[in-house]
Each structure stands twice: as structure tokens, then as C-alpha cells.
Length: 169
Image 1 (cartoon, rainbow, N blue to C red):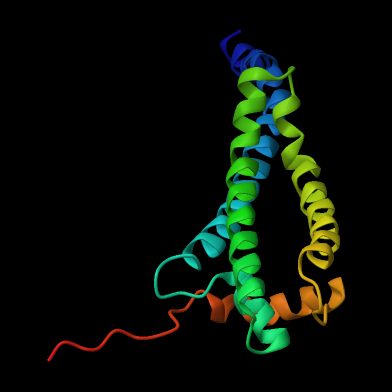
Image 2: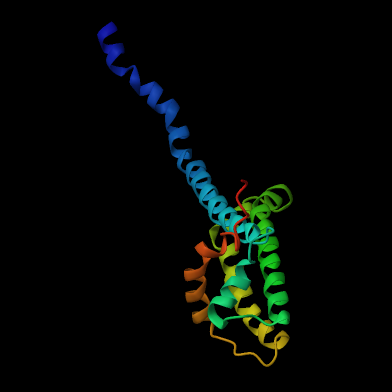
């Protein structure tokens, strides 16, 4: 009898653990997706925000300078404000799942992480391209494709200081 009970003993434990095992993938996927979301949007926020620190060139200004050369004062002002705008957007995108979890319908907190935030980025980039053409007149604007290509080449360099402080003697 003891031998028979010993052989069947794992069955009740398996049956008890089965509901937990079936439910586990959902929280694991949510946690994994949430971490990827926070790292991606937090990294973007950090990159844009650090470029606004004293001694640094705003990221969008560096991008525009990389494409067009020296910037007119109105273009420099616009690109700095645009860098601030993207900082605010990334901060709101990071806060959106928490706000939706607290205030939205059940499951709504997943919307930004499942494509909603990326969709907003695309729509805002397209809208900004139009606004830029209305706000900045008499300027050689480039296509969105050229802008994205320049962004890829300038992001790492733009976060570096534009000047080095003098070394203490």
C-alpha cells in the first residue's frame, strides 16, 4: 500500500499546481513586455533629456545640424522645443500604463505596451513633419526617411558634451 501511495503521490500535487502553471505564462509575458517597454521608452527619455543638460546640444538640434549645417536661431529654438516635447511624450508614455491600470478599464494598461505607444510615435513624427513645414519657412526641409537616417547616425554623438571643462591643475 505504501509503495502504491508513493507512486501516486505526485498526482495530487500536479493537479494542485496545474491551475498555477496554466496561469503563470500570462504574468510572465506581462512582466517581460513591461520591462522591455520601460527600458525602451526610459532609454529614449534618458537620451533626449540628457541632451538638454547644460553643455550638451539638444538631440533634435544636433540632428538638424548634422543634416543642414549651422542652424538659424529660429530653427535652433524650434529644435530645442521639439526635444523638450519628445521628453514630455516619453515621460507620459511611461506613465500611461500606470494611469490606465489605476483609472482605466480592466486590461487597458496593456494598450500602450502592445502597440499604442509606438503608433503614437509614428503619428507624432508624421504630424511634426507637417507642423515643421508650417512653422519654419524658407528652409530646405528634408524627407522623413532622411531625418530617420540622420537620427541613426547622430544619436550616440549628441549625448556627449559639446565642450570639455578645463582640467584642474
